[in-house]
Length: 299
Length: 241
Image (tube, rainbow over the protein chains, first blue to last red):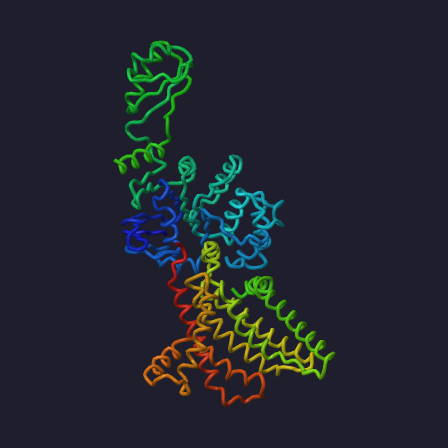
């Protein structure tokens, strides 16, 4: 559905924002884009929506050039910057954008009412956009993106500026958006969010895809773990010589080890009478890949 | 897209259009007051509003179209508008037509108000003049609005340059033939704002306006050329920066 092949974008002939980037998202897939600031996420999205033209390479949506697809199909887009004229009322903004989204008048009213309720915006519906908090503005951004039941949804930092309560609610809404005929692309700094919502994450840096991570896959060979015991902490240094105690409560950080070594060591601890409280990777799979990929690019 | 017309109309009437209408009403009132004051000191000359049609035809058109595209682009409003199934060219074409219709209606209003203060501007003349000037000044300004924020400045500069250029390019100009030829080229390239003096006849005489058909065609043609250029720029525009 979304295909980028050797996509490059250079600004003013010298600033290379994207460098031969190739990635794709099939129908029904949810893909994530992660990367440090300035990695090229927003440029990529602008190219996918046809707001920029590639310097070289190609980008297509549903096999069509971006503008041709966007102007004839339903695309939902939440930008990092929620730019809506400040004097528009919230419900007016949704009414206007529902017209532009091609929602019939008869359906628009019910769709808007549903979205206002779903995103907790009912009490703010008569407020002008300039009176909305950052969080409410972000919710307005998501509401307008969902007008017209789009087949392609592109979210650029969708939870930016939301409080933790709404961040969790947003994630639930985004999880519900998944369906077999819909393609979603989420660009975010929040790796936990991407881990929870996506099938695959492209890690980009300096305008290139530096790694593609299948977020449904199993752990890589070696990872760091945090180990907590209620008894038997004295055994840990002999079993895991490189373990580093953290805090006074029998917690240790284990340096990168593979699963077999970890399991063998844990078995030895249990055999020696230790009581384990928890064993968990110190970072998620995506965090691990992100750090590893970006470190390698930096090196 | 057609359903969005009422919102575009509302945006204009509550913004630049409303200010233009208010200024027109104020200027008509001031003109009528001047007539009353003059009548106290001697014989009163019925005030004419021809000048107001010309003023609004030029400045109202420039004001109406100045930020039409650039505002959405610089403020980032395009992000949501054009992520919807909307053709930007049609979106702005519709806004351009609607604003033009309001200005043409304003021409009719000035004609009616002129009748109230004793010296009417012919309705057909006012409406036609307004439409021609909107196409010319609005077309040139809209074209500039696709590439920069200060399209109104550009249009005013073009206006101020085109008037002396027309004088220097005329056969009566005292300069040499070679220089006159150069000015003539520039005169043809610049927007034909100098045709305003010819178009004044539309406001004072009844149709047919056979002697100004050439001026009308030049102004309309130039305005349409501006619109076509604007449409081509919008078609290939990089909205994001």
